[in-house]
Length: 601
Image (cartoon, rainbow, N blue to C red; front, side, top):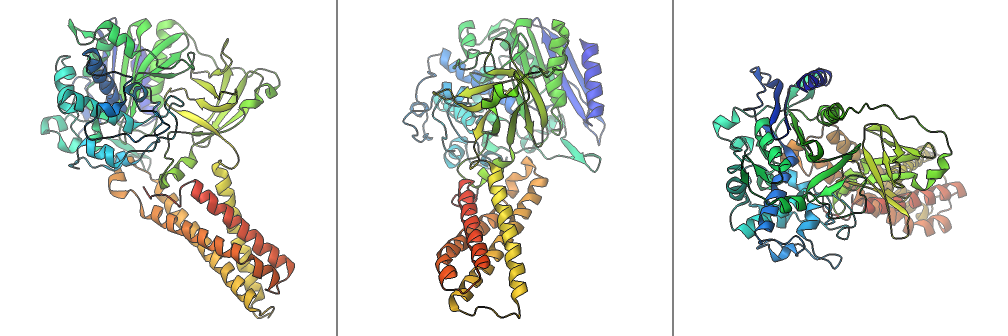
């Protein structure tokens, strides 16, 4: 096993220009492998030490929240199906859909919350406590409870607040006293890098990102009091103890913190709508791999990527983390390589079957990831996350994403709505009560891809923007052509012509603002949101969008005088009418994507 890991990670490290990787493997309740590869800090040539080098574990931190919740469930202090508002002291979850939010829904990521970028705009030195942040940043509930899996960092933070309020002590103190100290995890911390003691800060791996063909420094992600959802740091050997504790059903080295039945409950799914595909088991990503069941969690921050995978059937646990976030390949491939070696499985590419793809025609279409904002300007950022499903045989389809490439999925034997790729990843078809295809559940278990029609497709907005820009150009060319040629001098014609030129200016400003936003996204960095969100470009695009909408309304009002009082030729009147219609439709799309009509956050 050590030879396999050394070879795989050594190769992947060189291939993907990674500074450092740390890994721990536990097998049969023993630390089997603890290795460090590369350097924790390139400037000082500090090597990665699995026992001392701290890596920030991102959302793997959430597994501590869910375990803390189950501790309180076992003690009778919490019930997973009670309205969380009954436990909260200051925070109150707003009513929606006539149903409350429960801890079971939060742990399944099925409470229906939209995503939020505001969590990443809180500085580590922000004095506001978690409760105050949760109140200020409460996202909208966009799905009825249980209807969709929609990953929510805010929901995880809310669960940590429940622990804090019920235990009547800070979540950090509860975590230290009830989990970290009893389990001997002395090298695990939640202190932000800038707040760490000098001895800990010296052991923290430096973050890197690709730059000019090499590696440059990457700032650390800041979360402030939201740290329970993704701000912890640990060593590979400490995380090995965490894995052993869970593989043993709540016990480590004779210290039992959870009864076997309570721990087994945590690893049960709350929903049974896709048993053969990935889902969430009370906070743990429950992902089938071939014939095995894996439980774990991934974690990503601006400077680190982490994966924790437990395979109860093999009594196997793997923790791997890297100090850069530009590639998922090492942390995603190592677990499957290890499982394949232990089970003797030899993966092979999938052969596309012959057969009429029309058999899967009902699945064809575009799907938009629901881990996005719905209610504010940031909804527009979700427009870049569309996946296209194209049937290519009677048993399989291609999923293609502009930035992630394409992959072929073939129907899993005996499962009508579950499809698997060559690497064992599975997606499940989600149907409504009438059997119509409405979404896909992804291979990670925590996201849903919603099927979108023509009007809700981002390309519709892009097409209208393109048409409006073309009509802007032709309007300006027509005005230039008419200079010095005379023509109609009626007041209605002059007014309509001035409105058309104003519309051209508005559209030009909108395009310029869009370029500013696009240039900002080109170098998007989560760690910089604290000081750069919302951006100037977002406000420019917002107000330019309102200007377009206002001018579109003027053009619609001016249609009557343009047709019956301007003295224009019919082709100019038709052009004006088309311009007005396109701008009006574009304005509706701007509202739908929350570029206008919503807060710029």
